[in-house]
Image 1 (spheres, rainbow, N blue to C red):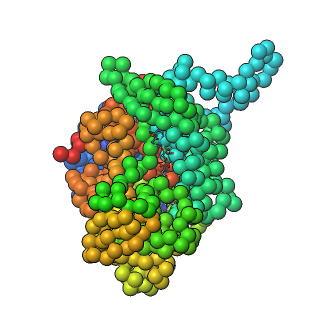
Image 2: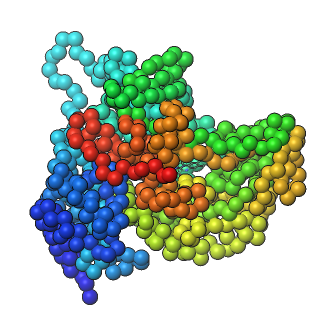
Image 3: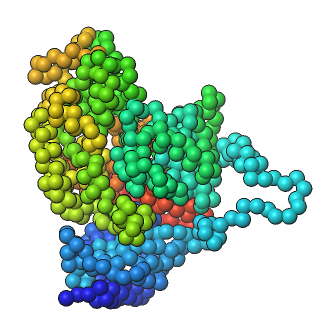
Length: 600
Ligand SMILES: Cc1cc2nc3c(=O)[nH]c(=O)nc-3n(C[C@H](O)[C@H](O)[C@H](O)COP(=O)(O)OP(=O)(O)OC[C@H]3O[C@@H](n4cnc5c(N)ncnc54)[C@H](O)[C@@H]3O)c2cc1C
């Protein structure tokens, strides 16, 4: 029987051999330490890219390109190894730290029969540009007697007045939602002059302006922003206005340069000067900005998708996209049709029902539903009080999730999804009996993989499913809309639904749509789609890429970056995006290995 000590010795032995082979520049010996099935996921430590190599030969090729420059060394185990469970039965795994020529990293390894199954390497900080925190924190005050002293407030005011006018930001972030704010905070700590612009009048408005019942669907342990976690008394599910206030306070406390009421209108990159020219409208005044890097943090979902329906212009009631639905107050007693059956559709249908509307949901295709409580129990195990008590910090949870290569995620998730279906069998039976069409993904791998593949197609149930199961929200399933008349929605099975309101909860385009609108169709085409893994499942066409396309990493447009995702992803990956920008600002050599070609 293998003991903990044996496991630790096995990983220490492997790491020593790996380190020695790399130190000798012996790529064949280093790659021979990987198994026949092998993955190496690297977050900018070796590749200056976010990339997964999925074979021994792929790993060898990457090392041949990068090893001489990266000069990895000082591989040290962090703590004890432990044994994998479930799908990872027979695996021994451990955390380690290492250094490169430019930075310090953290990684994770899983061994099977003494050889590496998965390796995960991340760059955590750049040498000489470490964040000032803990013992190295800024003094804050300037002691002594200084004539004409400029205090903190003066410095802040001067910076705010200059940036964007007399002094250009190195980085411009378009979009000041949770994504833009968290990235802005990281860049601030790294000393990268950054400006965030958002078209809303106040930070947090993207949440405040939505329908009344909106709350975060994920529990608080999953939702922290970088540096400033929610306090211990914070409720499990944050209501939208509270989230808005938190984001507004965050912008202030993290001392971010944030221009509200500022819409980005266009951007173009000049190859000669290696600089963007960005036109924004700030409180009605045009301003031209010239940053070196442009980050689109305009929301992972792109522009709202509204179907072009025959008769839409004739319809005399109200019709709007889900993103414009600010609440159901006006629709008490009205007949409302909600087109779609994912998160927004469910939330809006329930919101309208709460106001006394007569609601019908139209479901075109099967939807994945998972109860929020069950999702918390199985899907967010690493983000909980129990995890914290077991020593799993938010950072460690983020790294653990990221350590599993995307190719293997379904394998890990299929048993979880099966367990969820068993636990909630009655709930699912009731939904099916109401005519609701369910899916758990094409390979029954559940919510996580579906989110990575298409970022849509699911509902985390916070109450609307009950309304559907018992018929308080009417459901028409497996049908599409034929046309609208002056006062009704006509379905393609001939049913006519009289309606005062039609809400199109029909989703969003790819984030690349923002690049198309703000920069040009040519740039959008060169960059290719954002999000999705290339899994060749519904709405995620191949080829397989093994990473989320174009997210947080170099794109095929110089100095253009995409940032977004849910709160946990934005928190975690903002670290690597910020380090990529900092390295460029400091003139550190950042050759990108494996820049993906756009799909044909
Ligand atoms: C019902 C519901 C529940 C959710 N629950 C959770 C949850 O529990 N946990 C979780 O992690 N996520 C949750 N999400 C997802 C959540 O929407 C995203 O996590 C988050 O909104 C994405 O943040 P973001 O900053 O990337 O984008 P957004 O919040 O969409 O911010 C983008 C910003 O860009 C600005 N913008 C766009 N174009 C321009 C322009 N041209 N010029 C200037 N500004 C511009 C917008 O004004 C906006 O403020 C939920 C979503 C919904 C709909």
